[in-house]
Image 1 (cartoon, protein in one colour):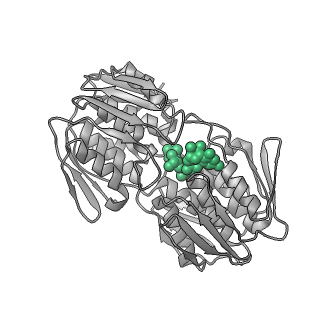
Image 2 (cartoon, rainbow, N blue to C red):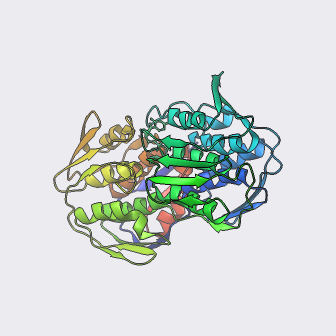
Image 3 (cartoon, rainbow, N blue to C red):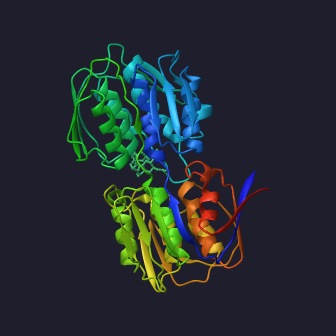
Length: 420
Ligand code: EPZ
């Protein structure tokens, strides 16, 4: 198994190009199930989760190629609709095949994803919404067995909670449904917005895109003819590199980003005293000798993203004073706390609130990655720590960060991938 060795304390400099967003690419690749033609999608990050979804679709009979950040995928050859446990258990986002498979084929079986390192993560809201659209849903031997023999019917859905993949599943299901589907309290994350925009450009009329109420006019089963398109930049990868600059007190530039998608992250960095130079498609962070403590509560977009909570916790260890971080989305998203403590961080946890006492001189240690974003917090801590940090189980990082070591090395960090 691979691990990362980081020799901390190096200053970073230069610029880094941000990859396409994993969490936009996943639903958009799944949306190719709604198309009759071969779909070409560019700016796809070469990360494990993308390969897992492509493998799942290929198991169903789809044909694809993935070269130079471009996926070409033909789902007209799909010959069965059972998404097996073996794949789904390795990636929860496999659930994104449920809506489009059911909408196109009127029947599918998708393994229940189960819990994960950050919490229970139920899919009850996805299932409730599909039922309202006329689907018959049963749970059999760990699978969601969904049928809609005469197609899905447009309906009004009110989500009790804002759910990102839940919204995406229902948007894709509604695209081929009979009649209009109104989704109230729909997620507004840029990844959800891009899914709506792509469907809208390819013949599915959607009103209210980017607001919390959208209306989708279903095509009554008529498949889409999808034009080529590019995936938006990854706002979480962008935020993680900004934190890498911040935690090492370095001036770096992140390129190929949409700064508007980063607003909540940029504002927190400014609150911590960092000066930012924000351009049309780049953000530069300046050196900053002292860091102010911060208060953060995670929330749905446009609030502060839960996917940046762990990275800001690592950064808070370097602030002069007490920072407070409240995790409001996932009940167990604090697995990085005990690993950061092994490096010397002073963090106390009470329920879903972490209090971080800074500034601590972090010391290199052997630490364990537990989920994707927790792992990136350990990388950040390793960059700032004195001595060597070995991060084990980095397959978590490989799920979502493209070329992490080479990007960090190009910025001047001392990072290498080794085998246990
Ligand atoms: C998406 O997960 C992302 N994954 C996550 O990114 C991200 O952390 C999360 O949204 C929140 O922004 C992808 O886009 C592939 P939710 P998702 O449904 O859709 C509750 C990463 O590191 N809920 O928006 O699974 C749920 O428990 C990952 O890249 C229900 O109760 O999250 C949570 O408290 C990890 N019932 C809240 O809603 C449901 O049916 C939001 O979850 C669905 C969700």
